[in-house]
Length: 248
Image (tube, rainbow, N blue to C red; front, side, top):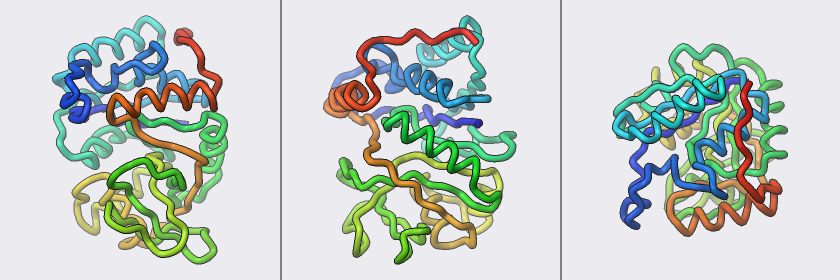
């Protein structure tokens, strides 16, 4: 499976807290969160990991190049300047053929469930996308999903405000996609953001958007989130110490 990591943001909430380290370099159990995520993806059979980074974050880019060259990891590092999360996604997956799974650098999820999600994406039809969802809501402005009555398809998304009637379920920040899905969405209109892209796919195209529900998944946006993430990965994934990335 090919993976895409979006790591080109500013990490504004960490900056407001006085954290000067680039967000992808913030530690989770003693290891930069982006390095930890790369380790999880390698464990999940990564053929290649395409990463868009903030071109101004020298420490991040240097660290990733070290992992690529010294550990011989299959990393495709693309420094960019971006203030649009969908633009970051489109830049990250340029030239990526077939199916891939995209996520932000701070995505936290149960590894065992993610492995099953990978298989679901691999098995889906070529004209289908498989979007990660969760009933765990930890964001002040989550991206709510609307499902069909049988729960088999996502038909709309709503950012913030009130959830759709019925089961409250939100985006888990994990996207099983194809390049064709991006092209179809942009043929409707250019998405204002990654959340807008999801809404276009579900509500304004004929693409089947299949939900895959995680028991819990969230992003690390601030120091409090980082502490909760460490507790979560320790309890759910059994991560209790730094695991050095192995050479491949």
